[in-house]
Every structure is written in C-alpha cells, then in structure tokens.
Image (spheres, rainbow, N blue to C red):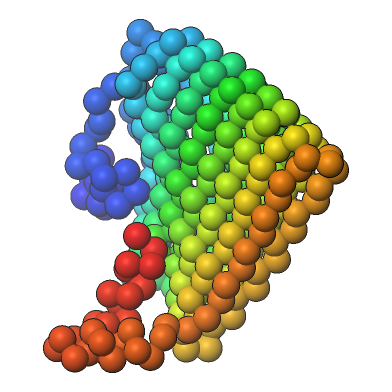
Length: 305
C-alpha cells in the first residue's frame, strides 16, 4: 500500500498496517491482500464481484477486517459481500470504505452486505465511511445492509460517516427471529452541499425479539439529511427508533420515524429531536477560554461520540 492508502486504512479501520487474523483488503476495485484463519474463511465470489465470509460455529474472540480503499479518481466500485456466522459464534467484523479523490470525476463505492446469523450467534459490526481529496470530483457511497437473525442471535451495528462524503443513500433491512436482538447505532456528519439519506426497515417476526435503532447526526452549511425508519412489530416484541440531530448554518434535516404494530403484544416507541446548539452551552464553554468555533466543535464531537 502507498501512503494515501495507508492513511485511508487508518481513518476507517484504525489500522496502521495489515491487521492480525482474518482480513480482506480491496483497493481500487481489486483484491489487495487476504488472510484466513482456522475458523474464518474468505472466498471470492464467482458470479459477481464480492466475497463470502464464513465463520465456523462456536468461534470466539476473533475479528475480521474487510476495508475498501479507493484512490483512483472516477472509479465506480460495486461489491456483494455475504457473511455467514455459525451457531454460538461471538465475533467482531470491521468494515468501511475510504475514498481519496484528487480528480474531477465522481468516485463511487456501492456495497451490498448480507448477514446471516445462525442460532445464538453474536456479532459486533463496525463500519466507517470517509472521503478526502484535493480535486473537484465527488465521493459517493451507497451501502446496503441486509440482516437475517435466527433464534437468539444478537447483532450490534455501529455505522459512522466521518466526513468528506458528497452523497450517500444508506439502506438497512432486518428480519428478526424468536428472541433475536438487533441494535443499530448510526452517526453522520454532513457539511457544505453534502446529502445523506438513511432508510431502516426492521421486520420483527419472532416472538420476544427486540430492536433498537438510534441515529445521531450533525448537519452544517447547506447540507441536507433525511432519516427514515420503519419498525414492524409482527409478533410479541419490543422496538424503539430514535433520531437526534443538530442543525447549523442553513442545513436541513428531516426525520421520518414509523412504527407499525401488527400484533397485540408489540411494544413500539419512536422519538425524534432536531434543534440547534443551545446558546447556554456555547456561553459556558466560551467562558472557559474557547472561541465560538472551538466551543461548537467540542459540542459536536461530544454529541457524536
């Protein structure tokens, strides 16, 4: 990897070099390097671009890194990744995409990730998106995540859009079996003329399953954000969706939460709050010697932490 790719890797995966354990690094639309372990296999698809990640039943305390790096301007990248997590496994998967665009053409990555968690499996999934570049070209990312949780499975998703993404449409769909749990924590910051749209749909089909979808975002400049969430309670279950956003300058945020109870014992809650930074917060920090800009940055960082 060159210096640019190493910086992208550090931004999206907190890595300074190739990771330990199983990993698959994709750079400019091609496989860069890969490693597997006794319990984690990574196989290249033969019918379309992408990989299958197969984690054996009972695997514990292992991690899988699958970052995507783009430093070639104008590249249009599309991948289909399928994750199969075996019964009673407990693992962490670190994904994400970093784009460095120094040209005038659009650079784009669309990732379709499908997760299949077997009975009792547990997964922590971390995904970061980051863009940079000194050109006029746009950085576009459109991730799609499809989650299938079998009986008693547990999945926690942490998705973060750090900065530098011109446009993104983020789609997440989930289906929960008996006693399954899905937790989604989304963090997004937009600035300038950027646009971000997120769309969650969770079908709570299993008895005593639960879902918690939380989005926190900051919109600056003239950027626009749209947050949609749909939770369908189709059995005895508990579901919660929440959107908290800070708007600054001339930005715009729309929050559209939707809950549907199709069962008498479906307990569903939705919340949405959008507002500016409170003046008293700024004043309190400025009395400590911070400039207004520094105070705003500290508040934003704490809100998205």
